Image 1: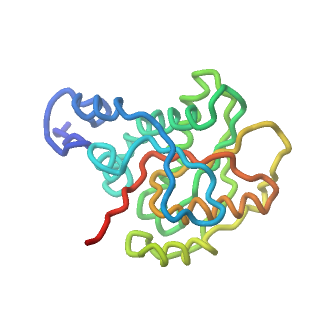
Image 2: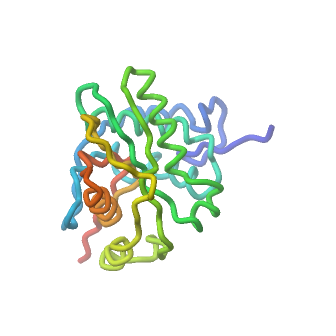
Length: 220
């Protein structure tokens, strides 16, 4: 019943669509998925496709969703992630979505697995467009430091032993494209670690689909 700030620009204005003003909706709709690659890329990193750079309304909407309890943004963000999956896979075919899991502590702080929610909405959007999609929580995350506080070397070290395959995960010998889902790619260490664990079970990811890619800042 109270006025809500736009998740993209933080202005309080009428006409919000799922918490985002028309101008920010237009900015998000104008983004087009494309390939991204951290430099240097860690070993085991599959091809990555991102909706756009981690900046502007996309960055603010992701922060509002992840860190400020705006869970209603999961549906539109999941729809945007579906666009990334469609571009990364190409022609319509069976797809197996594997979201990068939250640690138990992060899931408690965010009132649930934020990527799990995105994956479900992503799958719903793809199914409505005729894609055969299955979401498989194939991994569990082990406790690790918050990546926000780490540099590139710290992220790589933390990611190396951060994931384990679930006992119930059984890779199938189907023609489904295995797609790793994440929200942001920075150094690529997390996605590379997930890819190595999945590859060790017998199913290497075809691609990783993410919403945003950070841009490396050059120091003088």
